[in-house]
Image (tube, rainbow, N blue to C red; front, side, top):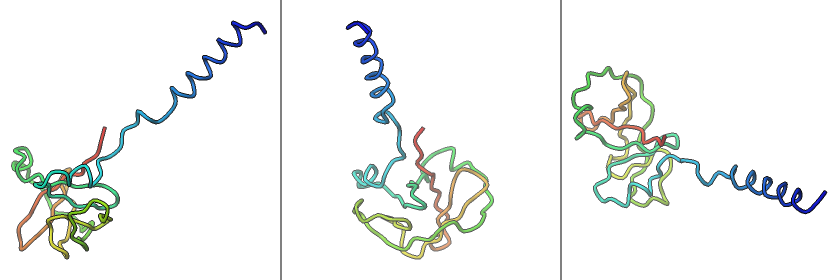
Length: 122
């Protein structure tokens, strides 16, 4: 093999190695992404962050049917490093979370239905 063929082959290998790296992959937002904002109202369930969307117009217009319970808040924290499944920064411990027939999940606090959406990237 001559020098140009070796350089070409080496260049292709380098492009494949760096072109296939996962540095450009997307990830779902983490509690840390939200807790930088002191107005955030989130909880973590099954590794997914849910964010309060009661002020979103299309959510206010939804008619939904409450489904089964999908979780319960078992810890309150405003520190991202201590968030785990069942943690919330504003919802009280014991709050039950329900699925609906829409993309919205509902937290019930003192008979008030509070809508939350999964924060999923891409």
